[in-house]
Image 1: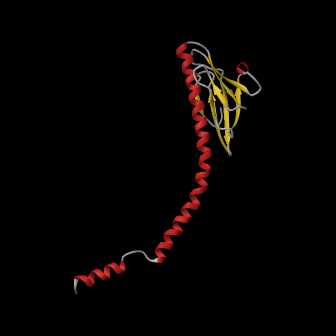
Image 2: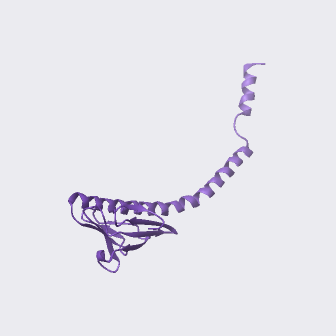
Image 3: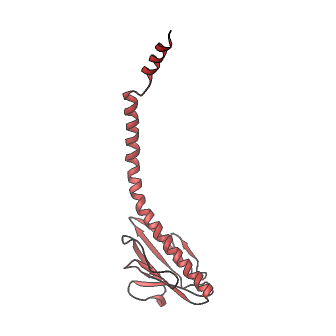
Length: 156
């Protein structure tokens, strides 16, 4: 057999059949159809997680500043405007589609929808919690009154 005849047979068997190509396309279509709902639901969860992280960081920074500066500091949260700020945290906003519910000490109440968490130089606080909800997903930030620590929990 010549070298040319051997090359001709290898070239004829190279490539994919139509059945193989269709099988790959079906697998890709099933993967994409399963992934799209997960990805669209994930965007809301990412937004909620980002807001939770930002507010928790602001609470911790305000507590730390109260300890370091040896003075009372308050992180104020406006649930209607979706804003929060303190002496050490510049005014920030979180996503407008996030529903927020604030439970706090009456002494930190500024308005009908505005309240906050007061931190003392010894690290303690007035305590309370902030519930955030987006598309059926709930997150609760708890501020312990005795220690002033901030944690995420199902119940406070």
